[in-house]
Amino acid sequence: MLFRISPHNFIAAWRRASEDSGVRVTPQVLREWFCEEMGRLGVPDRYVDAFCGRVPKTVLARRYGDFSPEKLGDVYGRANLEILSPA
Image 1 (spheres, rainbow, N blue to C red):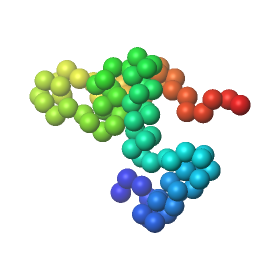
Image 2 (image 1 turned 180 degrees about the vertical axis):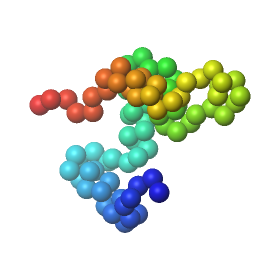
Image 3 (image 1 turned 45 degrees about the vertical axis):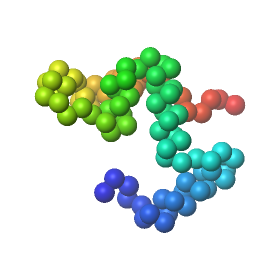
């Protein structure tokens, strides 16, 4: 189970986030924003795809691509992505 929350509570949390922020917040909107920001910060597409759950399945990619949790953590840390800017 990816989220240890009931579907009803999950949907309610997204609804509250939308109401509190004044912006229609959906998982799709956040995924698009995340991909655009990571690209803007210079993160290679293959890692952005991996963060979004799209890891290549080819033998070549598995053999020569490093998608380990340590590597992805390093790439994410170097991107220094900030979701909220200080007020």
